[in-house]
Length: 73
Figure 1 (cartoon, rainbow, N blue to C red):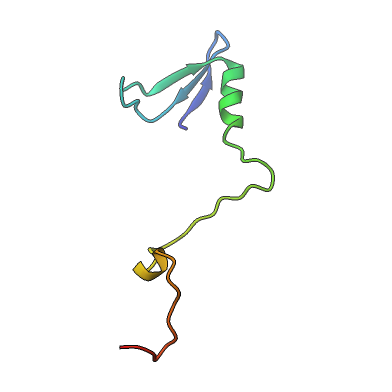
Figure 2: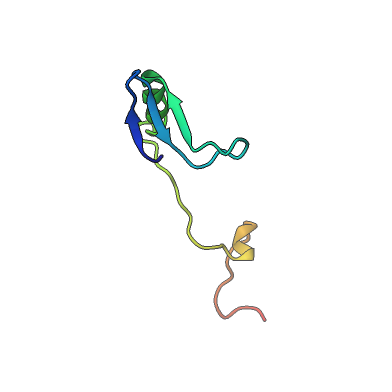
């Protein structure tokens, strides 16, 4: 989300990334709608995001077990 400001009529203007269909960069929301949108960004309690860094090896990606070092080939 970009810049947020309250208008004189009580609505909230929110600067956003350009809309893919219209190209609009500004959203005008009612105050309660703005609070609703912001609260959706808060995760549920005890819910954590899991991040996996890097790319797994081909054998690990398909569930194959690792071989013992020194065996094979």
